[in-house]
Length: 91
Image (cartoon, rainbow, N blue to C red):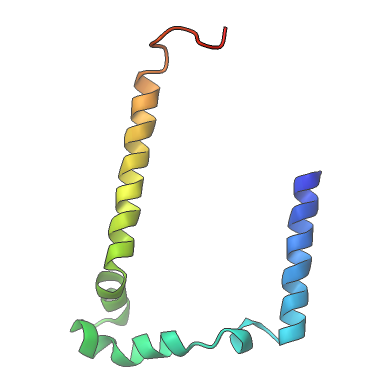
C-alpha cells in the first residue's frame, strides 16, 4: 500500500511539473543533442550519428556497463555454486 502511494505521489508531481513548465522540452533544451548531431562527423569520423555517439562519446559508459554485467553474472554464478557450503549459519 505504501509503495502504491509513493508511485502515485511521484506521478502526481511529474504531471504537476509538466503542467507548470509546459512540458519537458521547454525546461530541458536539446542543446547537447543539437551539438552532437551537428558535430559528430568532425569529432568522431563516423558516417552514422548513432554509431559515432555510441562508440566515441559514450565508450567508457558502454565499457563500464559491460564490466558491471560481467561482475554481476560472475557473482550470481559464484553464489549459486557455493550456496550450500559452510553449514547453516541461520539455524
